[in-house]
Length: 570
Image 1 (cartoon, helix red, strand yellow):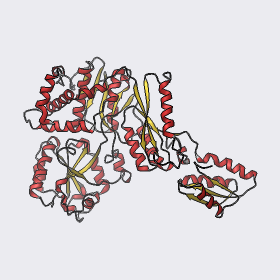
Image 2: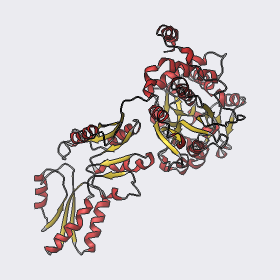
Image 3: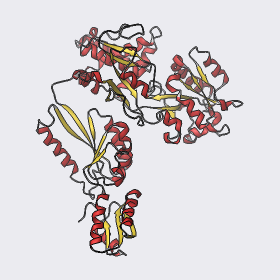
Image 4: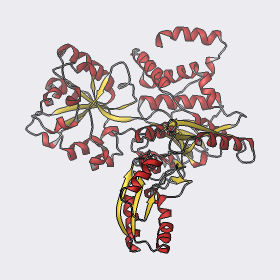
């Protein structure tokens, strides 16, 4: 893309786009600690991460040069902690008259309620995660990669692959000469030659110290600071020359998407432990798990309809992020300009070449489209769900025709195939989470696929409305506050069954059910015992069973009364 820069300049001039109107960002726009702000302004918070720097500048330029806002400032912050970030959005005591916006807040699924007067504007880019990364060029074909890329290696200095990651003392000493370098020397490494992993800034990855302490990994950490990028580029070339046979590797602790991990060089990821396995990882906000990157703003801004529209629709796709990384790489080759000037140029270039895209952030007189994400078992036709998609779309159509229900809005049902499989349902749920103006999820159909998404929905503030999940487990509104359904729990019918049996003076009971949770069965057994019924057998059938198969099961040793739970036969 960068090779076409001269062409873009010619194109902009010849097409009549006035590039001079984009003044970009100057020193006055980036607030300093000495400035006093006496009027209400909009503040765009920004960390030192390159993508955050660029995307903040893009939105700044859009607000000032496209929408005409004048009281907009960029406010540097120096925190990556989720709660601290949101608290600064709520109120930055340094600048009490500035209403804050943060376009790149990493919010783990485990995060609780938002601070007072802070609101969510949806995702700004694709999901991100931290990881331990190894350049792919250092892996040989004859080595089993999954065995040599696992965190368990670093718990034992005698592991077959441990020596692969030992960095030479001469390299470590060279890096420690940098003025911004900081070293964490693990106490358990005393008397041992330990692995050293490389990271950028201590304040964005200090959580790794707790991880090393709790997991007892024989690893030190070296934070390089401002010279991180050039150091990684140099090390990759140096290792390719010295250890072309793959006899040595180095590890970097970083995040993705980022200019380094998703740039020119390809990296492989070391398998990390599950978040729930270690307290330190839970405290850190599950940094190694996929994490939503969201936009937050102070409630004082919500009355500005134009600003809210732009903020909610602001989103950079993977393609845009790739182009930004290419631009960063290109401008970094010019050693005469500073990092701040690089970010400014990249943001300007993006604005000048993406007019059609950023115009989507401008409020128009057209109706705003609201989405409901449907999760349906599209190709499963024997469970009674064949017409649910058509019914849902007809309901949306009826709402859209009556403008007294949602004036100014258009309701649309999106369709994804959940296949009654937990992994496909989760994939659909995560996809919908990143769609702007998503009201919630309609579905899924099958009880056995609900629990994973019902569990995380409370952390993502996303409603789930199921039309056929009957599991009793989901009646616990404390555990699943964002889960609702239009069908009753299957346990609601048990009391009616028991009343019928008492009237008929039956005492022995057998049960045939679809494959459901043990909790449903245990609750049913408790009710039977309380009313002096004897449950002689409980048989679980597969979800897909014909009436004939049910009949044959009934004939083979069933008492006078039994429960039979099905949804598509009479």
